[in-house]
Image (cartoon, rainbow over the protein chains, first blue to last red):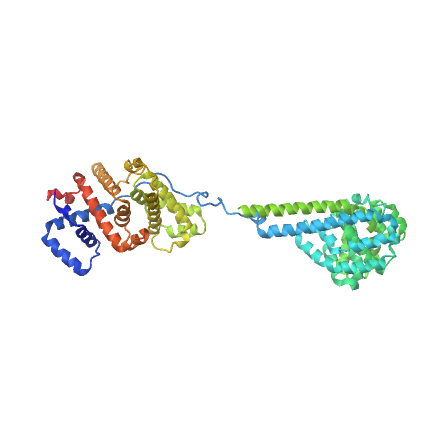
Length: 362
Length: 202
């Protein structure tokens, strides 16, 4: 055994720093002089150098297991949200569904209430008819509703139009009030049956409604002619979704102003098997036939086309007539339709809440 | 597994973008190094494994603080910091059993042998490394972490000072004492040592 272990801490510190090249020039030369004269110091330097070399070559140990991370370790899901799920849980989706839900519920509730009010006053006479259309004046709205499930954008457009158009329609309706009385008588009976007639036209509806309604609302009174046309389209649609009741109302209002003679009306009423309507407005046999004919789709298309292409109101004569008759028939169906819409709206609301909840949690 | 992956920077970039798979490739490439450092600092396998796992979790979360340079050094600094924090915590609230510390040598993480040697050399080297680790383990926490960081992992005084929250003077003096202790400890194993190291042969 050797004596080196008697070195002081200070000496070890000098040797250690010397090893690492950490001594200032003066300290280094002083130490080197000592190393030449003190074999014990020199020996210890050699031992320390070897020790550090051994430590440096110390090989890695093998990890006892893999330390790869799992998603849970870093507190996140396995894969980022993508596709439908991602879309469905996006804030935008929730907001849009919520807005659509509210809209549907409001419209649906409106229809239900409206339908209820109709049922009672229907017998009273002309007054109710005129009023109903006014309330339901939301032409765009009515159309939009049928579309809502399909496209929200359209709905929004419809709403915008509604606000503007409704007032106009109301005015028109008031004017028309006296005239409609005739039509009023017709409407009550057919109410239950319309549902059946609806089935055929339903398919047709989608294409025509959106464009005409918009035009009508924008143009206002001046566009009365346009309205007359658009109503025709609406009428054809009416049966399918029941919402059309409203649109019909507006249509009527427009028609009434310009052309009170409800000749055409029979169309739908006939199809609906409502004879009463026909009696009230005898003349329109011409138009009625097409409706009754097996190819209702073709009819609706034609009307729609007219509405879109000629907003000026040249054709006014044809469409208005049809509208007048239909009003009454539609109103009763509004209640079930309204309920359906409300339910749809509530369903959308649930979807919106659910997606929001999912997003928050994740 | 031990070397730095060729596509290291690519993996790092992917990991930063959230790819756990890319990060796990880095984990596999460095886990032996990280575990080894942790083992030598902590002195026993269980704590070392915990520290290694924590190191990679922390590294993943702090990937944005990696500023280029040696990823290995960046990772090992996290590892030593993790170990240091754990040692501090234990000092405040000792919970480890003496058994853990005493029988720490283990079979689960034996040193990786050097391929070039004969079986006899390998055996001798193994014993020497075992002796070294015993001597390291015998050090106090403060000296051990500094010795491992400096002489095993190759960190500079400055890095060590930052990791341990000490000043340079403290690092130097602790390191010198640690080296002296290990050197004296190794004397007991002198039969295993290279001839140069057999002090009494002089």
